[in-house]
Image 1: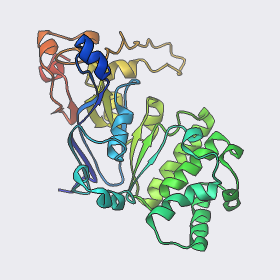
Image 2 (image 1 turned 60 degrees about the vertical axis):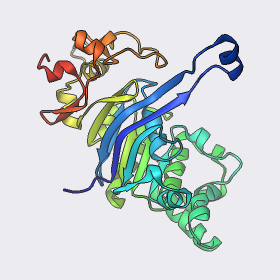
Image 3 (image 1 turned 135 degrees about the horizontal axis):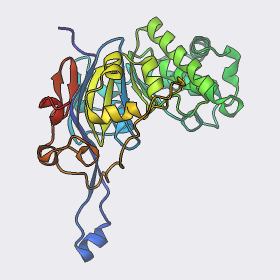
Length: 329
């Protein structure tokens, strides 16, 4: 069996949002933890695009930062090419970062406005390679051409580019070290719709040329349908369903996935009724017992309110739902 390029096992990240020490001492207030990610499991194969979707606040971006080492794990393990990267020391992580890069959501915020584009793209080369100035300039020119920009653009500043061009610069920076795996944290959500398509097509072309693997995080299901091979659906810090893209869009199993897909606006003109996502996401500081989706689920039973479901395979789909397990859907 082929070893997955990335494997995430029981990953969790808790943030301490407790009152101050003085408040806890004087008023006996307890410590409070935000469980942004709470037991996530998935794997990603070479050359594959796995998309993570879900409502805002479900933990998608936290997963991205756990994979790239921007956040540490509170629990669990992350494997990259069979190696446990969550327990590596600093020098080992530095070497690993050549193989794993990230494209951030907002190109306006992720590029240093005081640096010229050439310096921005060359920064990873300065940190991780021994290329001289001429070799770096050649590599930067090559990368700019690769993402559809002009090599002369390296002398300009980020504010002199459009939003789509800035994201191309971000992609060029991510490609500088020839990575194998790129985490894409909503890379097109800050762009105009027409520009989104251009950037997505560029990313697909680069994947085919360079053999890249993507973790693609998005709340836009139309974008996910265009780029993903498999889709994972997150809800309140956990994955509730993982399936191949076409299977998930055609026959979603988890009630939450069904609600998400039912909320997509109908642009066909057929007048087909759409089901809005019912209710509000619970307070993550005080999540519901059992299945965290049960307050919004039309199929919830006492078991759902008391027992958290496991992510189990059901007809080729991984789904965490008692109703699916019991054959009630």
